[in-house]
Amino acid sequence: MREKGDAEFPFFMLKSERFTPNFVEMKISEIIDAVGDAVVARGCFIVEINVSKDNDVEIVIESETSNVVLDDCVEISRRFEECFDRAVEDYSLTVTSAGLDQPFKVLKQYRKAVGTQVEAALKGGRKFVAELVDADENTVTLKYTLRETVDGKKKKELVEHCDTFGYDDVNYVRPHIDFK
Image (cartoon, rainbow, N blue to C red):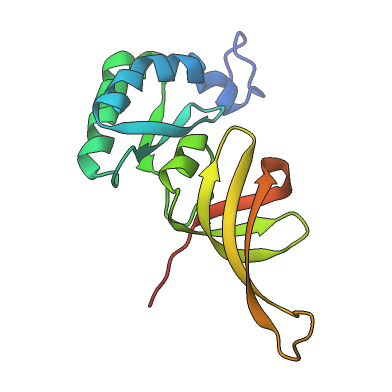
């Protein structure tokens, strides 16, 4: 290796310029192709894949019917490592489950949660707990109860609503965690 004083090596060159590894930037479509079968074989689906500029890869999965277990993450990680050479792609890998406190990101999460209690936040700031009744590609239907003024009554009463919202009208929907 040449030293600072060597005429052919400019001493002002930054360390990162001298030692930056030449790695291949990973593509999400290639990752899906590589691990998709393993994800399905484990009874799971992909919620999200994030790849940073430094090839820090995060694969977020959820189980089709129950909860993600450690073996699901381990098996998908193994499959990923079989398909990608760490020396070439120079990556770090995290395979994780979608968190209970995280908003739903894909339609399968909504459909899996139909019939359960969720927390919803609408654009404009309104938040409430509701039953997720239905979800499709464009809308989510929520059944919820609010204390409202009713004509002819002095006290507010509980009024049940079942409304359909477009995803553009919703900030988030996530599982409701009840600590009772």
